[in-house]
Length: 137
Image (cartoon, rainbow, N blue to C red; front, side, top):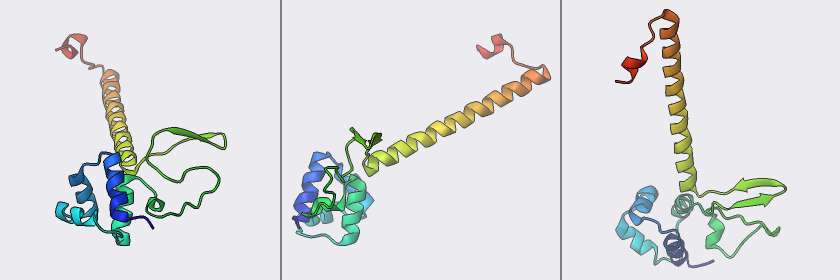
């Protein structure tokens, strides 16, 4: 097993992680993080939350990599990789959450536009569509 604190610190530095955000996600204080980065091992809950935040496989903390096929099990780059003629994109947990949030915002905008379109159709049907002059004000 690798030194968990050192490994965690190295990965956080590589990803340029904002320590305050990391601590809030994990549920620890910045002071505890300093102690945690010096520890050779971490409790499983903190290890799991750290991996979720960083978008990495827990195997990063061990000298064990079960996939012998040449494919990587780690998550965190946005580089497309070809696997069995299908293109896949791997995202870190943070990137995934941001992508999910972006898609939710897109869906909300589409719903708003559809609602506006329906409102305009009703106005046109009733013969009380706003004039182009009033819409340009």
